[in-house]
Image 1 (tube, helix red, strand yellow):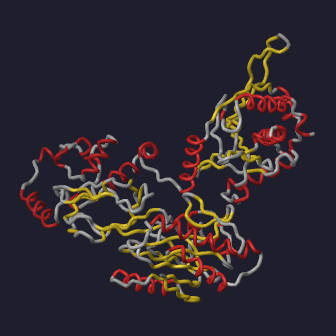
Image 2: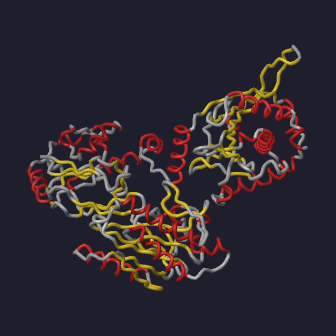
Image 3: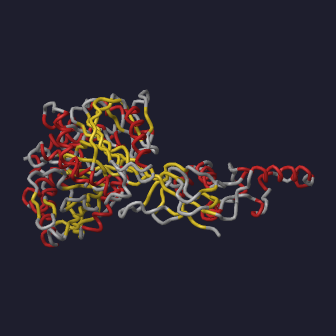
Length: 200
Length: 389
């Protein structure tokens, strides 16, 4: 079972420290799995093998992390979900796990009548031809960290400074853009929590 | 005994993995269970653990490179090809004690080819050099004691002539190119293609083009788009896609035009071509071309295509056939307009000819359907005045 924690608005690095702490505890026998929900302050992050050509505005500070994937943006209005789980004692292998994160987001979006889907070979969640959620995880000694970023009310203009995940920034969308109205973040968080049974 | 460390299968569906970083280097002792590297598969960054204990004798796949599951990425307990620092030192001292013969020094450098056995190189570097016909004595080694590593071979191959790099160097695929590669091979694998070609009498078409208002800059491509849209309107089955258990007729006629760009093939789409005039199509194509050039295509320019046209006329190609752009039912290949002797009213005259080839999905249509469709398209192109009506 997951322990769900709502961390509110928190700096990326502060949340990273917290994730590392939980991963360390789990590597040393802690049974509880964690599902962390939060929003970050403005930050651009990238996986280890990012392509510098995807940083269009060379003046932005970049944080390098141990998740998979290329550069992306996080900021207020974007729902971040981190999953700290022991992959070895779960029923998933790493690719199943990624597919289940996609499914979790798709099922949640269905509740607000957004028909989202996954695209083979382009990990993430898509609404028609636009990307609404990005996924990138790290696995340290069998324990997962990082997770997904879902654009709820994100200011999408920040994406134009980069090629998010190597794609054109115009391809990014948000719930607010689709619904043409801002959405209550806490409501979305609640909906995620009730879909978590997927991982049991 | 030498053991291979292989790219582990981290998931049922994993085909390959990219080494993101090595936590160990050559000559490091590793213990079973210890983290030796980080690998990226899909959007996951995973640590990999040593399966055996021993000393790493060679790293075969360097950071940033990919390896297939099961392929060796490093060697364990092999014959050490890389010397320890103290051994190198000892060797250097030895060398200094033994001065070289003066006559040897006078040999010009470029003719001086020491025997291969004297050159220190990693096994992979040797293999690569052999494959690429590179003389190891020409390569500068960056390893300890001047040992040549595979990265030095890459550097060497990159340096002298760029043409050589094109031919033999590895060029990493951009994600876009990977996606295109997947789509193209999936199309050829899944769609039973067949091809029908017609020779179109292009005399009137050339005349029509020459008489167009030149200020509007209408191109042959614009004409082909409009002509294809007119033909598709009459034959909606060619404006469809094959689904699992049915054929889906597409509501709109959205025609894509293939562009060769530096990043690979792009097929931007003009929507509702049947409802737009030639001028409107042309104006939209101008915007699209501009966006292609500046890498500013919008998603709506890239999606929703129901039929594609590939025109290689500008390269003087006489005839070719295209791969269907999935999930479309068919695609048109347009070749160059050229002059040749043709029979008209039982007389041999010089006329303009253009070959058009339709690639079609045999699950949706058969040869006769394709012939009828293409014949109608040929008629439209041979009587182009209808295009502006």
